[in-house]
Image (tube, rainbow, N blue to C red; front, side, top):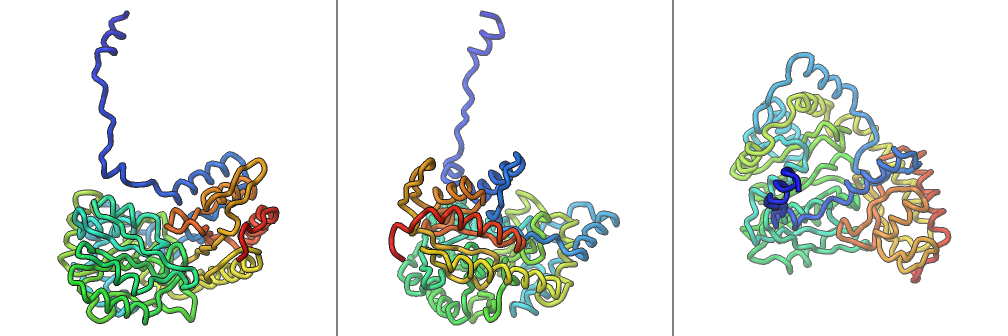
Length: 421
């Protein structure tokens, strides 16, 4: 045995175990499927990718120019941890004018995307053993963020017949002394549902009975909404400002996903805690992105004509898909009132054996079948807490959506619903 081999065999094996906290967290299926579809496309497979929650529009030119000018003018250094005063002041103005909620700049923290804002909020307010109440279908990251905080996600199912909106009675019956946080997302990812003001008021009445219960209101899709639906900020309801953490950002409405810019607003003690976490993790968001954010908020009420043009296109796409899928046998749809997703019930196709593929048992196997047979990448509903459905993102051109529908229809045409609908 050589000296090198002897030395190697004598070495102590490195402990490669991971923390129980990390082991409790599931990887994001939307990210995994998007990455897989991208790899297929790069390998020459003509996959249509409808998995990612990302607008297909370029960042509006006036916003992009603000970012470019920031670089040219030397705004390339570290920014204050909570965000530039210029941007936080603009956010306060936006929240007052558009949402009817008043904050001062020290009640705002700007982060590298709304996802970071949400995670920091959960870490800031939850203790080990606390419960985080999450209506399902939910954004994939909510339960995992609760687990990262050593809290327990409590999933409350909703029904497609109720447009996937939380039943206040179900909420009330599931609140315990351990309940610390209720997460609401309106307009919703993945369903596109919008909570009417009257329903939010009923939820607020229940929340008000429980001093320990806070609300995280994820409003990232607020501007992507289809009349007559209207957005209501939870913090604007009577008695809710003191216990609501409002999260928003620039990715969806302003087509700024790659700029990584979001923010949280709330009572100072909670926001200071979020700021402290951020100071020991990423520090402040990009100085360049923040200049672009100021330009975005300067476009006018609800993003002005730039955003309304994008919303008009999203609505046209939604209408096409709702009509088209509504004509397919064995499909249930709740028409989305906001965001850019369809969450369609395809469960009548479960239980079917497909030659050369195997049995379609659930949303994941149906998505694999549609990727294999139709070359369309979608996200299985089990990632969002509802295995009966599949999420389709219509953040793609109408031509692309028409082609994807034909592929899906062709892939399903040989399948007959296993049960009557």
